Length: 82
Image (cartoon, rainbow, N blue to C red; front, side, top):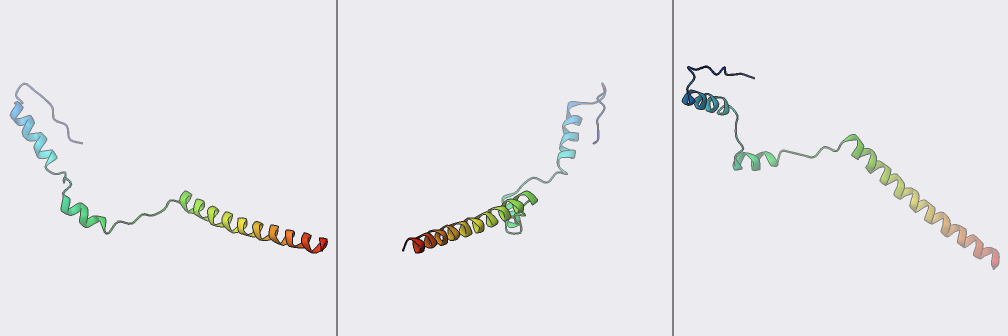
């Protein structure tokens, strides 16, 4: 980062010019650029998000298996009573 030493010979006009000169090198956001770049951006999930999605998928599969086994258990009980 560049620093400006303020001395008695430094005028307010020079300080203002120096600030503009540095800030002119920083591109500001413009409406056209942000819309054009938006179509090239994509969301990349984090490792934690991927693990959470895998957990939810496996959990739902296990819940389905549990329901299926409970139904089979009920059917076997009904067969015994009949």
